[in-house]
Amino acid sequence: MQHRIRLIVLTATLLATGPASAQQVVKIGHVGPVSGPNAHLGKDNENAARMAIDELNAKGVGIGGHMVTWRLLAEDDGSDPKQGTAVAQKLVDAKVNGIVGHLNSGTTVPASKIYHDAGLVQISPATTATQYTKQKFPGAFRVVANDAKLGGTLGRYAVETLKAKNIAIIDDRTTYGQGVATEFARGAKGPGVRVVAREFTSATATDYTAILTKIRGARPDLIFFGGMDSVAGPMLKQMKTLGITARFMGGDGICTEALGRLAGDAIGEGKVVCAEAGGVKGAQEAAMADFRTRFRQKTGADVQLYAPYVYDSVMVMAAAMQAAKSAEPARYLPELKKIRYEGVTGTIQFDDFGDIRNGALTLFTYKGGKRSRIDVIR
Image (cartoon, rainbow, N blue to C red):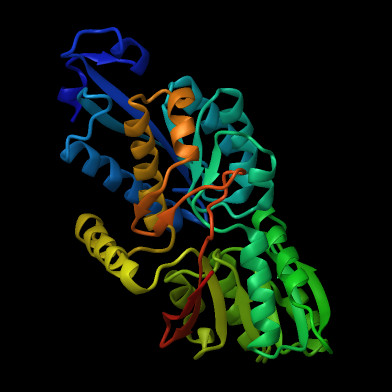
């Protein structure tokens, strides 16, 4: 693709007044953790972004009747807020036309201020922290349900369906982990329901014996963990070693194909219940199944978690640019605000805050070490 890019590279602004033969390069920035404990999810995301970009180029998707070369500028934030803001500024300086990312709420929220100040559009495929869109940045969007819906729904499910009475809550002290745990606690209300323990660890910890021993004494029938699969897997192993038989719940951060591998036989049969922010059912399942097949053919790997949402984030941004006949954020932003796009993850429309309208959640458990869908709810 490099020889094509070298032909004649003009910005979107120059293209409007340049010769008809000029070829525009549209730069889409992607940020995710391709290093560190969440690298398997970050690589999953980056692969999906590249897949979308490659398809746009292969189909010859243009803007305003002009030929376009779509280019991905991918950066690694390592799930670290400082690294996240550094690469955000790097992408601003590279004059990207839009941002897809980040993965973690803890990196997305601080980076969003940098993008906002630069007048860029950002679509997060994974961030669930309510704080992200509560900042009311006009260019901030997300294609998954937020923590209020995710955590609250899991809390109600724990009480109403799983009949949990004594609940322990652990979070990893990240923006995401604390947020989803707090919303879970708000939803887990009912007659005789008690939160018997509220503990915390860190996103990089490996030994949870002290807090689990303390929790064991409170005799919970369900433990909720706000954090990522890289911690949840080892935590489940240590729960088994300590003889803790409580059910285990978590949000989309733990709801991955990798959790079964990370937890080993401690995953149990139907012991873990989690929710993925998103999901399709009925007629929309065919598009998702097709995407998963194409993703495996292209990357040689199965979808981990957020790849379909990354793919749709790139595609919905491109669709808004096409509708506006411009890749300039100020010009395609109004089109993004009113767009209705049929993606592999379902219908994408945004509310006044940039949150996805009528966002779905998919409930899963694990059987035979593999994710097994319970239901898709809205």
